[in-house]
Length: 218
Ligand code: G3P
Image (cartoon, rainbow, N blue to C red; front, top):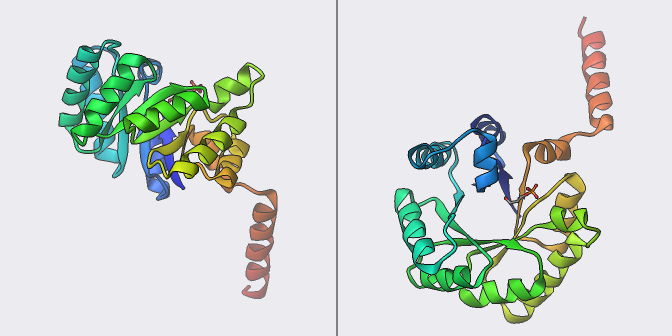
């Protein structure tokens, strides 16, 4: 299972990278805006800084919604660094663009996915990654994890190579449940990654080991 961090915050990306378990980064226009990154040049430079920090794939989202615009933007983004994956929205013009990029061996991440039907279309178009937003489905009393499970079954039925990248992760249990279902990738906030490694019995056990060592060595 690959671990991506879902942020444009460079400090958080560095912290996750230093942990040694990071496989990539996903960003979106809202995450860039949250970090105060605006203007074409600044946005491009920010992507390049992220690529310098991590070794793996870095999703950079297009803002065009027409085929020609998505192609132009995507080809430019992909030319910046071989780590860049072009993030394309699940709309008809986006599907056409994913097919185009696939034919040109440009990696894509199909984003804003909320149904199994959309997942089938993205896989048929040849998306590298598929991003179902599980937290946003949970937010409206729908079952985000059930969607991951359905897509896993469908992709396995046909040996689709599109990787399921569970997105809009809210907490540690989302990660664990995605792992049980067999999502290929999770993209998560740093807090959820760090939450996985905490356990009170680890802390109390370590404290006792260190105390006992000190007693017997003093
Ligand atoms: O990057 C896309 C996705 O992970 C967004 O998450 O928390 O805005 O629903 P969220």
